[in-house]
Length: 320
Image (cartoon, rainbow, N blue to C red):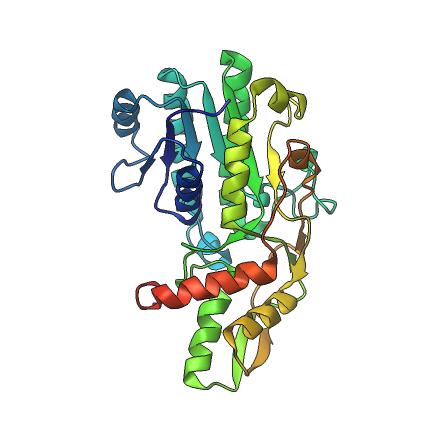
């Protein structure tokens, strides 16, 4: 059953804004709330929001996010802020009688050397990638908090773990961005400068899977609307989250070459092997969510072209 009034926590971010666009497209009532309106680390502010909102579902997209550099530089903030955000929102939803909730996590929850493609039951079976361990631990805690409230209080709190996301609304800051916006920004500047070479971090051999954020938004609405019996039949109380991805990965070198083509850059790619690759490979199994009737629809080539077109329209405000 579709909820009738959804609170989207973190509506200004890439994921939150995509979910708001999808809710608009489906004609669903919602309120998108940003951290400027409500400090999600503050319990009293969240209580006031939920007391006055009359929500029947919550989608948690609010989070402190960033790439390898940001995760490695600010581990305390990535752990503390994300723990506080999710704990406050999940607990407040329960205390205010909101039965359905959707928590958005990340594929970094899985062990660094998990068998590929990674299935949901790989969670907590090995060591995490050190460069984003604090963020991953926070997201694992969010999954387990949802499971615990469901088990103890009979709530219907659900979790989706998306692969690497990109698209409209992404963070294009040069140091703290994820790989697609970082490379797109760097290659665009190199094109403007007429550069002969452009640097890419790492060896280029690491493999990654990428999902357009609009595909994730459709997956989120689909997962939120599936009836409780159908959702429960596709999951396990001890492993209740669902992976969301494409089921296809590429090397960072292949990705960089695709972005170079989209940008129209003629420069040579130079790989800085002194920079970390991170996890060697991160490919999700999406068999479970396919059982719920969802699958991705935007190819990487089309998604990159759409993202670059959006970037060009926003360049003056996005680039630093």
